[in-house]
Length: 126
Image 1: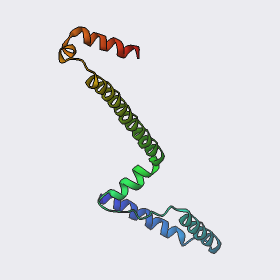
Image 2: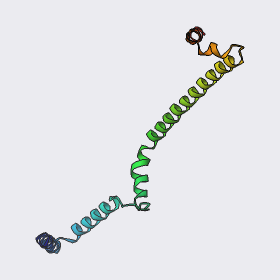
Image 3: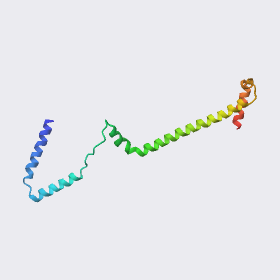
Image 4: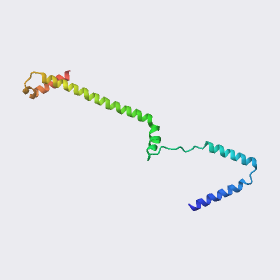
């Protein structure tokens, strides 16, 4: 670290000695070029700093916001279709149960294995 600092000091000292030998026009042009370069240099902006939340929001989430919104829409769609399908199946089962319970069959008919096969056959035909 010390040798690096010493090296940079020697370079700075050598460059400072060389500027004394420049003519006035060259020094003005170098000064203007330096000012233009400094004007074009990107200035570090301030970040929202709530213990990393600002970095998370500005650098990770916002550049991918469009993809995240599309993914969220897809997820909501899949969950919505699943809920709708479950509700439809529940309504169908409710209709079958209501029809069976409203019928005037004795309890033993529901316990008969042939009756279960007949129910399966009837439901597959519908």
